[in-house]
Length: 209
Figure 1: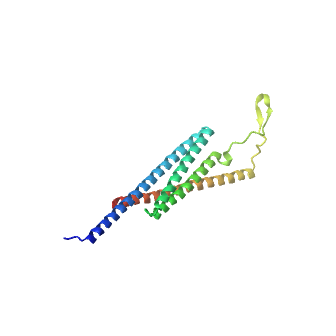
Figure 2: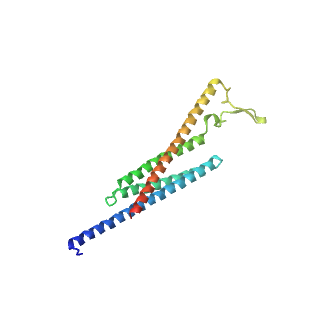
Figure 3: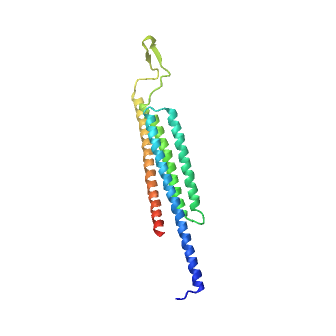
């Protein structure tokens, strides 16, 4: 069968388009895999933060904990920076995947919410329930210095009103802690759903190559 010159040119154009499509898919797959790698870094950072906080609550030093918080903050900032760059790449004319850029952006929003609530949980746990917090002895005086017996000036007879105030404060604390924990759980669920979408997209693109 004779192939005319016009048909030959058309075949070359089709082949060129096919190569461009494969190149585009490869770039998108690479970006999405890198994104999943960043999510793994975030997961490892959270594990390190939880471990450090547990050690702090068990009697670890304040300085060591603050140093860890600074380190984790830097790690999260770097992860966010890289994801924002990926969003920009996906929006470029040669890739034109605004849908995936929006997906990554949605994960970013949930990660921000998750981090803020995680910090809130740790602050609440550090403070403890109001009724269980240690009291300051700055206003105490010794009634018998030689026997090291002191009287707490701030300790008062427990009345019904005081008991009610403590109960209300504890209820507010418990509610705030529960709300933050539920918020983290919701964020994690949403993030995992988005990550499944990313994995599905990778599989779909790989099947087309």
